[in-house]
Length: 91
Image 1 (cartoon, helix red, strand yellow):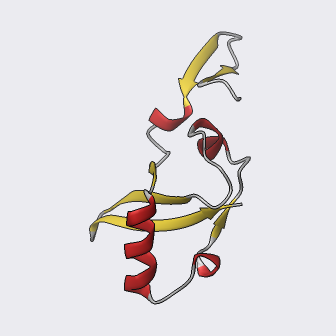
Image 2: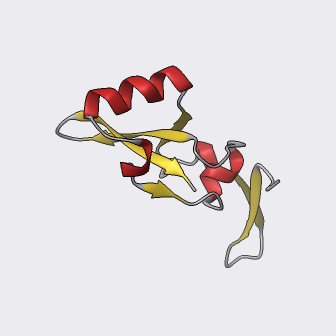
């Protein structure tokens, strides 16, 4: 398991720790339930294999204790739409 925080060294040599899932540049990631996944796939008329993939070794995914086949809902902020949702299948 990867640690929740990472230590970064800046030019000054001072260590700073960050929580990868709480960093301002990382959008919100959520593991969808089986029912949510079923509703999503039915509404889009696709199968699970049609979803874009996200690697199980992606730092955000590693923090979430996911398994292959889980579907992740990623919520990004948008200046024009407010929030935009992306869905990825863990591989």
